[in-house]
Image (tube, rainbow, N blue to C red):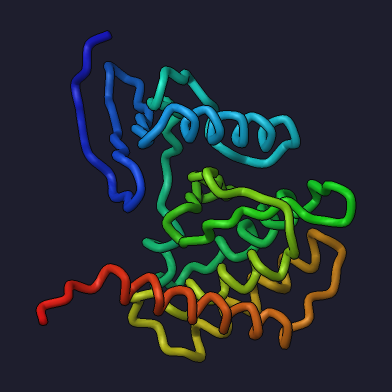
Amino acid sequence: MMIHGFKRLESKRNHVYLIQSGTESFIVKVHKTSEKSYLESENVKLLRDKGVRVPRILGVSKNILIEEFIEGKTIGDLISRADTTWTESLGKWFSEIHSIKKQSKTLLKGDCNLKNFIFTEKEIFGVDFEYIHYGNPYDDLGKLCFFIMDSNSQMSMNDKKHLIKRFLSAYEDHSKTVVNPKIVAEYMEIEKKGALIRRERHTPKWL
């Protein structure tokens, strides 16, 4: 295989690269251990089998995972644009992953950072599935809404709240459930506290 392009992508946990070979592009993710690489590949296969839109796994070797490249923009890139059609697709995506149950618990995305969702102008694809687990769907909803409010876009707080309302409304429509905004706010506050702890942990200590 002849490699024509090579670009390192942003990731705090792993080394992730966009590789171009001829007319094809794919993602290479280097995990810290082979166990994590295998776990993520199995998580992605589970989601694809259930009809959730995620990249195809092209190969796994030790701690290296190779995935299909999805052409599009992350929600983190799109959030400051006037076009908010992605909120409908994102609500639908979460309704699909939350339709997967084990006993009384719901399958959760876990890591709901906005850069982990790619919009192709038609639909959302989720990426990065090391931390999916079963739990309360409000955990995911609160995290996603927190990341919208915490984004670095130039949008006003009222505009961000409008995005959240559109997202939750789409989620309700597709999941056929009623979302309690007070509970979402409680989980947003939990995620806010967690984010503060993570940031303090990564802040250099000069004294």
